[in-house]
Image (cartoon, rainbow, N blue to C red; front, side, top):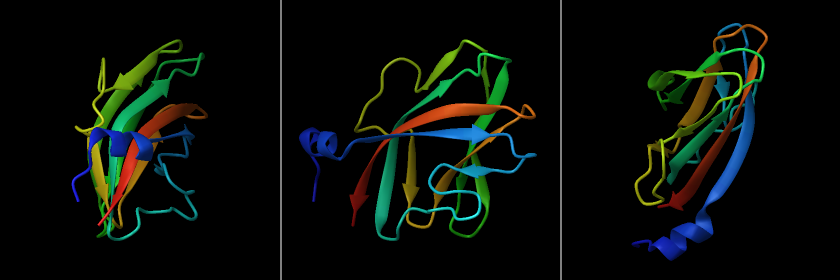
Length: 132
């Protein structure tokens, strides 16, 4: 089945999550550290945009990794410095719902990590899912 832009618009979702500094522990975007919720098998998650808000306190760096089905991690975006009053967008400028910046398949997840002790950073992800 080929999806048209109209179909993708109906599937488009936006979620926000606070990514805390956890002594260099990775934080899954879907689920919690104790119980991550990986992408279901036979599904693709197409991430089309990521927005990162500054902490209003100090410059903080955040990185994003893809959790692979075999238990390893693949670095995707690092480091992304975010000034206190900054607002970052990936991709910079405009986004395309048909050209994702990252694709997650069944058994994978998106993880974030913040470098500044005691800091948390708000991350918003826009995505759509496709079941095969």
